[in-house]
Image (tube, rainbow, N blue to C red; front, side, top):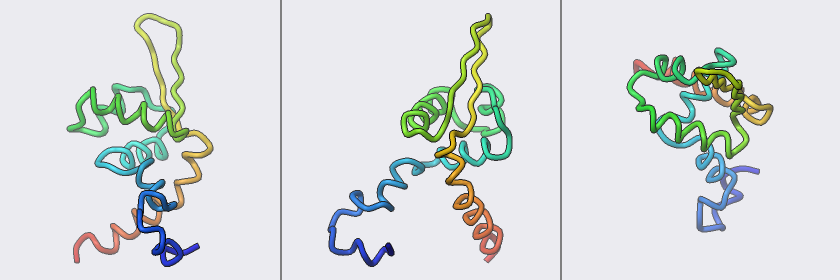
Length: 112
């Protein structure tokens, strides 16, 4: 299906494109997925450090959303202090070719 196939729907949120944006849209979700694609598993504090300006609350919320959408797996170890690691699920990994294409586009067009 192409984007032209969905012109008649009237509401873009009801299209596959709308669904995709609901899962990976926003400022942080694709960056989190990209980080996990490069390094798995990643602990929460390491992810926070690598992402930079993201707040703890925002990172926590974004990870919960990605987990609820089946993109990220959270593994908690029963120890003190608590240890939690995040990795991509199979569904999350299926998005990697798209992320790679976005990176290639950015590389080609960053300085234009």
